[in-house]
Amino acid sequence: MTVFHPACLRVDSGADGLSAPSAGWWVDAGFNPLLWSRAFYPVCWVYNRVPGYEFVELTGTPVFLQAGAADQYDDPDSCQKLVDSLSAADRPHLSLTVYPEATHGWDRLEPAIQVTDPYSHTGKGGLVDIAPSPETARTSRRAVVDFFKKAFAPAP
Image (cartoon, rainbow, N blue to C red):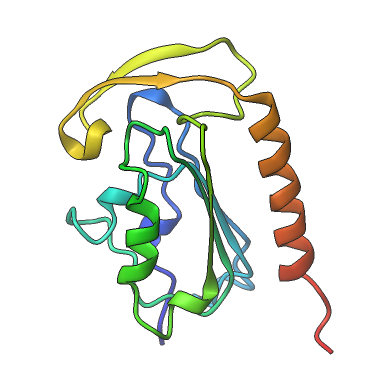
């Protein structure tokens, strides 16, 4: 049986404490597939490149990635490259939205901060700007609601 790899469920946050993939519940105590998965500002460059961060053999449940083009953990196209690297069977189950001016942590309510993290800048490390963007936060939250509506829509 194929299971959703645990790397997709981790909170691999680095110094910022923000990268928070979340996932739907297990159907029972067995390893039945998840109903959905959503990740705000995942650190995409790490998946399928760093041991322990495999993103393969997806279950066919919907996965929604939301990333910021100004996120200093990734290059602007890192998440698209991750999606493109998946098998033809897995790719259709992923949705990706990249917000053009969004940094890591765009939906935080606290003031902007700067942190140092060795995972930033595609693993080169360095300073990361984490800045709220109220407009991007509203847009991304609406997108999550739309994603849930589609993921939980009754079968025809």
